[in-house]
Amino acid sequence: MLKNMPKVMTPEIMTLLMEMGHSDEIALVDAHFPGYSNAKRFYRAAGVSIPEILDAILYFFPLETKLFADKPAFMMAVVKGDSMDPDLMGEIESVFKKYDPDYGGIEKLERMKFMERARNAFAIISTGETRKYSNVILTKGLAFPDF
Image 1 (cartoon, rainbow, N blue to C red):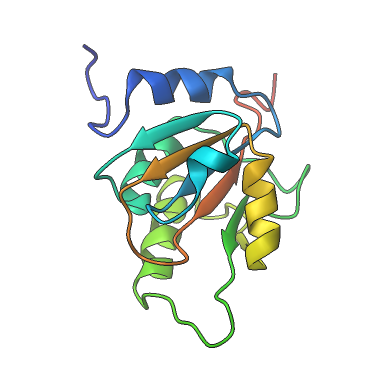
Image 2: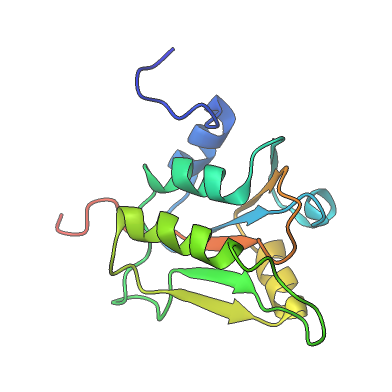
């Protein structure tokens, strides 16, 4: 047992984050995403929303900087004719800004390009999130950039 550990953070997910290296990516996906069939490493965060797990991860996780990548995060673009929960993007953006107000932003990827990027990620964490287009891919930066 540890102090100050987010309740949604499991030992397996913490180990996963520690095993990732610079520029590795992790996909946080909703309950609809075919994570198990597409993952190199698959983890569950059942009953947890994307903003909740994102908040728990970003507490520990160094995002990639503009020095090495245009954007440190990716989301699936809304398919033409479909819609996204109007509050979702604001919730996700506020979590990123909580940890770094100048984090670099989120790049939107066409659906199949997002799926391919998630498939190539270091790992996929499947959540209990049910809102469409909530999937997020994070790129790991340097934990000690001045070292």
